[in-house]
Length: 83
Image 1 (tube, helix red, strand yellow):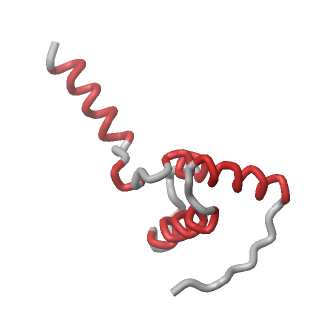
Image 2 (image 1 turned 90 degrees about the vertical axis):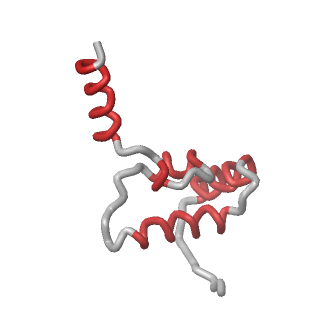
């Protein structure tokens, strides 16, 4: 079930957001809903991913993005143990 939400947002931000939504072939409501859903599921934690990056990612699930520490570990392991 959906319900209306009134937000106060700068006009320039709304204009850019609508252009962005159009280029992504998604509604602005969908983008806002997905972002609010993501941050609210983190049980009060602030997400480590910048909101602009989340928007740019489009349909990529944040959970599918590799942990930077894990990537660094794999890199160092390959660099020093596989020479």
